[in-house]
Image (cartoon, rainbow, N blue to C red):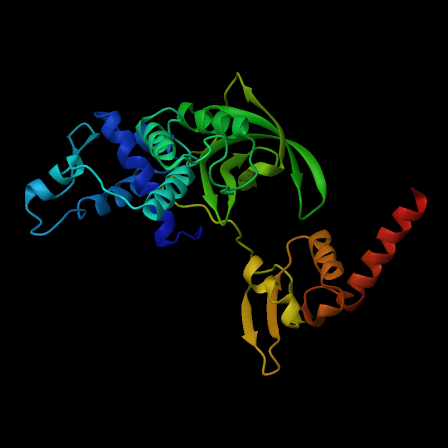
Length: 320
């Protein structure tokens, strides 16, 4: 399943709650689609809101989430939300930074209550409203993010020109988007791909162009309630084992690893699933002397991949 930390969930909740407060009575399916979730995921997130409050946790001190028999949701805020806040400058700046990040969550209104509150707080702190805090949540095109979010909500299909980093190829695909979500600093769309005839995960910053398709195919399957997996290798996927020195320890934190072993000399041994050889070649060239192959399953010539790839790159430069 896609990795979701407690902070990820809290960020979603903090984005969803003010939108529901400002738009009471919307159906759970509409709210879920707006924020790139399934209805089950939305209800699971809202279950946390029931527990928000202050001692003695009486009804007037708790946030009240109401979902009627038709599936329409409203939120009544506890009385303490009406009390004025008295913040220090440090607390205010931290709130601006955190709230600014929330505006990038799919489904947030750029001119909603939260955005207006950020503007007022930034003005009070004397923070430059052009670019008060540098927060990086991925390199996805804002237009692509909005179009895909709308396609999910409206059940539309889209055509994309997509660059596959692992295989180093560009393809044109027709997809039926199911949900848009963020994971580890990048935006993704979980969709049915007609080219692959199966479900796929596409990274938004690798979509070079995107167009909504007018005619829809009613035979394409729906998403269901299963959360997408960013990386899901098959049993037959080849494996490679690398020994990394201290300067290459970032590999274990950057890529999904089947196994990680800390070595006595401070190095790290990792086993990686290899779904595309161009990706592995680039990794080995990037590692240089800081990583070496010590084992490989299901493919030959692993020891020579780095030198072969480097020779091919040099040959390209010689021809240019």
